[in-house]
Length: 134
Image (cartoon, rainbow, N blue to C red; front, top):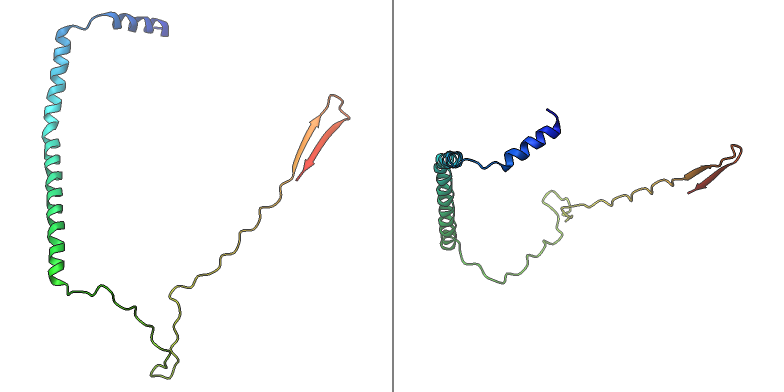
């Protein structure tokens, strides 16, 4: 069969009415498939709901336990003062240095200059025009 014949056959099939028995049979099979898979969906939804309920319960209980166990803290505490420069027991001087040393980054090198050349050939083989630029 050629493509044109197949297209004509499909057009004819589209115009024919589908028997009612076939529609009912297909709908019944689809419904059976849906009902077979439904228990897994319901079980998954119930499991997700249970997990959310347990998480909400744990989140409510946890802050209450913290409040009773922690001692009261003053709202405004003075900032800790750095220790004065002293000598260690070994006689070495105590120096304070920053925990993070930042290195200066090297700048990226400039990209090399690119030259552009355009060659234009004319009908006369002895004449060629070259355009060169940076």
